[in-house]
Image (cartoon, rainbow, N blue to C red; front, side, top):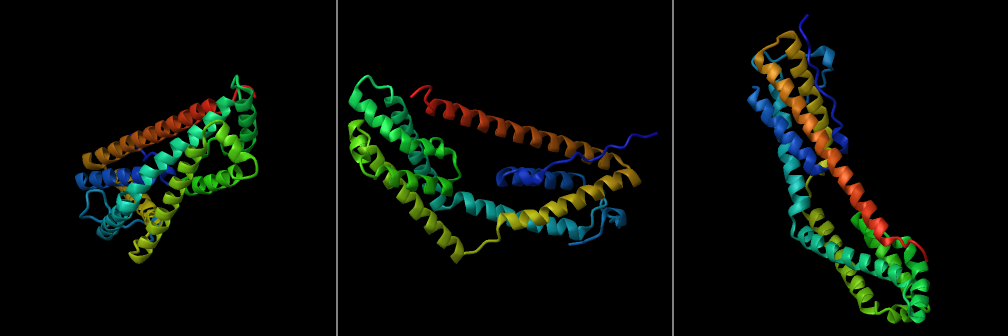
Length: 268
């Protein structure tokens, strides 16, 4: 009995936009190399002129949405505001980490005045340790909360005692710049609307499911070297994508743990 190779499962929803677009670009290339319908998989009507049995209108819809996805992803990553925001976000991350790390370290200062000031500040900054790893808008709000706490009675004097006054002022400036650019980018996108990547991806998820199902069904009903190559290469692509996703998540978790360990005091 001839072996049937099924299409591997891939969880497209968990990929970020860049990973998703890369996967779909390579999937599109495979379809070219291998050759809004709502039919269910058991009601497939093959396109006899397509080597993978995929209807022409489905390929056309996929190509159109892929172009829209490319525009949406490019707009979200290549705008002037986004470039500036990326640089400012790095600066405020460094400032925030420096502040929390310095306060943590100074709780062990041999000088009583510095140690007392650091212990007072530590109670205020403790909830914000690791805030540099939050999503950007959440980080903006967290920094605003931290700055409010550091402006309360007795805090400015404690900051001065461990020479953090100017650093906190710089963090405030960078956070305000980031918030202003966020609003500017939002307004710019409202003036020139582009369909969100999220909506486009929902359609492409369905298109991918249909096209891979057509190809698999064709490989069973009318097996050829073309259909066999397509299924094997698609599975290789899926495996590679899953591996790279898992590596990215593992690296992010390791980096987060390393930073959290460096910012947490062993003893106060």
